Image: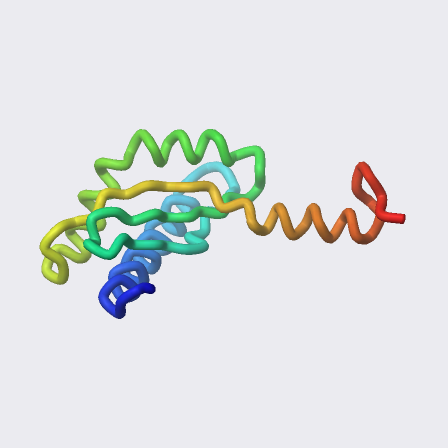
Length: 119
């Protein structure tokens, strides 16, 4: 069960990264969207799992690769944002959230548009 502290730290991380990714997308020459769909923080606040939705799909691998390469800078960024509120800045682990894709795929299959139409 998540503590209030975990929820607060996760919310701060989610809001700060949402703003950062929004600015990066606006500054980019390409048109894409990176949204922070969820953040889970371990009980000791040492690890933050950050789930990202990236649209359109063709940018996913390149954006995830870039995020992984810049993890240190992202940890420094979050450290500056929340350094006064926590003793340890969590390690950041980024994951691609494909839940919306799964929902879309399921809806298509239910409408009979998928590869294997439902009888």
